[in-house]
Image (cartoon, rainbow, N blue to C red; front, side, top):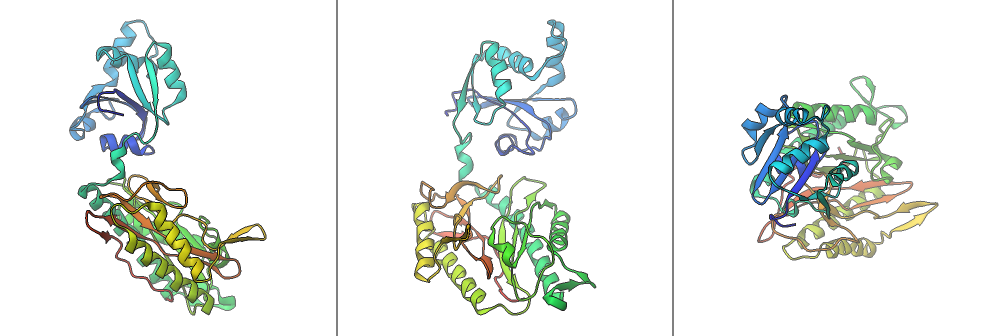
Length: 377
């Protein structure tokens, strides 16, 4: 869409990345945002209005209470969001708006009922979100640092853990489970002013499902995938890191898979330049795995090998454009911040995945992740 077309949004900034991008302020309840050309308005309740006036330098802040009172004087006893939106639109002499693809359908129908033309905007709402500014990259780096704090704590605990009967791990005199290690990781991230949820601590066979968060006892001599993706409580930007470690001795099979995944990630990063098709990067990783003898197949109803994308954009959402996978389109651009996370997964062995974050610069790229890669701890 162009800046000439009025944009209407109704969402909160806790869950809607586009709204957070538009205003840059956390608001837990849905509110009205309207942009016409280079001007923007937000409608705020008494609870938020003073904070909004202080923080939202790019928006004109309108009192929700004032609009409600105007509507009540006009005979509308209980003004709904649709009536409030209409009041604002009439004040600004707007009779046609564009709304995001995820705009509430009921609200859109109510506005149409009042005679406003409502057009659905195909995503993305803000195409400029895809390429990060230097200031945004710093925010991602800060969140990535939180992820590395969590990873460092996880590795410390595993190094100090004792191997007990049945190769179960014990820490501080108690059984070390995926749930317990996840809690340890997420606690230190909270202390760093981040929020981490659904952190993956998947041991052995559980690691063969890339999005399995993991549960139960952790074992020595088996690969443990640790995937941490915290969100900054201050900025809303995400970090993302994955390491695979073995407490004790890794088997020859795991060691070979680990080295292959590490080499594939290196090759992918070397390809990351402005103008490189994202699908080509993924294809190169698949081809490398095939040449090394690691085929992707389906056995007994389960996928084996490499069966997810090589990476994804990172920002106000943990998964955003651009995607680096078999069906991705487009080319890398300056300002893209992407993860690079190839992995191999085989039943009977376990999974191995390594993930770093890369910033695409006008000339070359910069690896933002600083955390070391060590298989055995």
